[in-house]
Length: 508
Image (tube, rainbow, N blue to C red; front, side, top):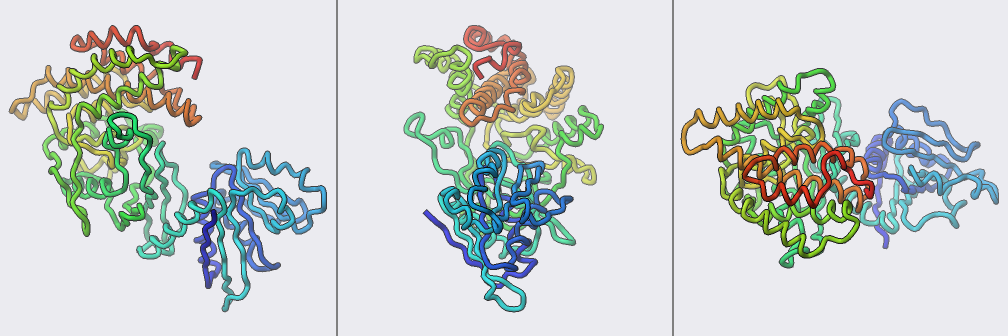
């Protein structure tokens, strides 16, 4: 399987932009070959690629050393020039070892033809262009075929925006398949979201995949719709500057690098930040979503309901992934049945209670400090494409029981009290006691889901860094299960799952 992309009239500026876009896609294990006559620009592209990973490095030609390695924050890059490669030297270079934790850029790849992997990107330079330009032919082989197709689509999308000539700088994303880049021009910048439509996974219940059962966004339409709805209500969701629903690209407003965790590291008070975030949730409770949200040039988006079945499927992740890891055996059918029968009445009640916005991932990694803005606008909102119409307590739990960093119990208690007092002061049917029970129920549901996800990320995906968060999440879970209304679940969890002190289990 191959994909071909031909670029005519490539000057140095276009070569630099191409390098920045390729750099976004490079990962460990990649091989990029550079072919063409002497002086065609192979080394220039290689040097530009390296520079996009490490702006401060000098990139000499590796001709005499054959291979030059660069340790960059994201991955190691090895720049190879095989023009002077002698017979027998290839085996001594350790190319397979270099691929284990990095990528290879290879000039004169024909001298290593017997070694080249099937999955690679070939770039051929042709000097037939005019006025110091080149023609480049990019060919993606194996898994690079689909990646090159996506790269070409991204370049085509950007050409239709005001950021066609922007440099693209890699931004660390989340645990999803989405990718991000900062688009930089001399006078402005923005963020590119690269979010291809996700294929449905295998059916797990009632003939439906997990994403459908829990109402996860399958494309970028929900993000665009929710962003515009939040902005219309005075919240600081990023402005959508350009989008392509079919291809899955968005250019959006850049809030900078003031995510809550980074701001905390600079000495800003956690209670101050959390108070501002809770103020946003109080404002959201007064500005519920419409059943359908408009999307310019497209059909309206219907906001899904956070139903009991979706909550149960999410909570069941702890049984499906953590129980087998902790118990050393497959989950018995009777244990699953007991788990679901205990949870179902609690979740059926929760799904009908105190409805409004559920942004779903309202926690520190997705919140930005924007002190130059006033009121509720001083908290930037990110990662809300999975938003639902459901119980308002869910986002408050997400914030006050943050899975990625510690929230002192005293701070949680103070902000929960303040939230309930503010809602009570408005009058109406709000009940502080009912809300606290709802808060505990959704806290137990959410933290069960997160423990299951962290176990799944470690077991299935090899992402073991998430294991360090398990004890914190389990402590939150124990706080929630202490509520008298959850006594039946508390007894089951005590028998079925490890305590916070015993996480992560040694089997993980």
